Length: 434
Ligand code: NAD
Image (cartoon, rainbow, N blue to C red; front, top):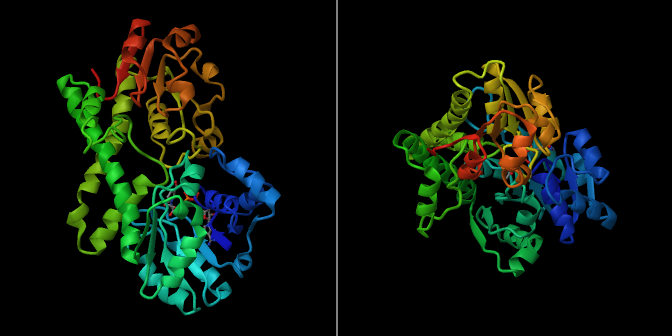
């Protein structure tokens, strides 16, 4: 099929490349000329495992193109909307400017029978609001939320765990077009769930609300563990054996961040308020507050570990990205903790295998070192803030001891073996652990 993908960021670039890899003819369109230039040359403009390979293969196949010209969407059977929906400045609601602009720009290029499939995460009611504009051209509007995880985005796009297609009344053509787009996944038995627009929009924000709540739940337990001497990691293991609960997303630490969970739960709460149902998701404000408190806690632990003050102490942060296998630093807890420590007078060094260029742009006041061992050399304290393998699995206390005389580690992800660090002579401070 011929497809267009409007917005080629973390979601759209992967979607475009993945759709070309399964045999479609794809044009990716973005207003950012630099991004389009990189993508056109087969270069991933951000770090995402396997994306580079897919872009090269797409370029070689002649089935994948990128442009800044929205007119290139003309002739595609399905147009995916993948533009950003960030948090509004000074408010919690989602900023729909980019979605509105993209739809407006696309309208003149639609033909009767085309399908517009929204992938951006939007407040419930957005599709119903946009539908008359799209339908006036004879095209149909579907909402097809995206559940990919950064770091696993290529795999998640090609082999999703479910496909959700929200459509309006009489939209069987849109359903069959999307069934054809996702034919390999459908043939592999992937659940293909057809709903109305509102349900599809809600599936996405409800999923993120649930995940955020699960993380904040265990972080709330970490807060209780801290005043009782309990160990939240053992608590999570024991809870996780209950199949109704499960161990995943029960990792207590410095909490969630990134370009999705924080802004999505805030936008959901703001939309519920508009709908007169603010009380129904009032707990999301608490989920957000618990999450942000854990960043304070990590800072407190560093201060405590260094004897009550970090002033002029050398602190090395292992990680800048909001999660491993990504260079995404949007609302990264790692950088938030780094900036706060710097605010307290610490001499902060940040290292990360992929995210330093992005981090430098956002926090030019911090010091950055590419090499992990160089970053650790001479540090008074080491803080694990992003669970890259190079830090969590591969850095041993014995090796760290050869790099610095400092003997304090703060494990912001509860990723290390506390006993091992202590046995090697380190003061180990974890999140919600004695
Ligand atoms: P992003 O900021 O990385 O990408 C958005 C892109 O849209 C940018 O490249 C921007 O230049 C482009 N853009 C803005 N206006 C445009 C226009 N009028 N025409 C063409 N391009 C335009 O954001 P993202 O992380 O890819 O997220 C996009 C959407 O997908 C958001 O709604 C997000 O919540 C949702 N989502 C993201 C993920 C994820 O893991 N990143 C997962 C699921 C859903």
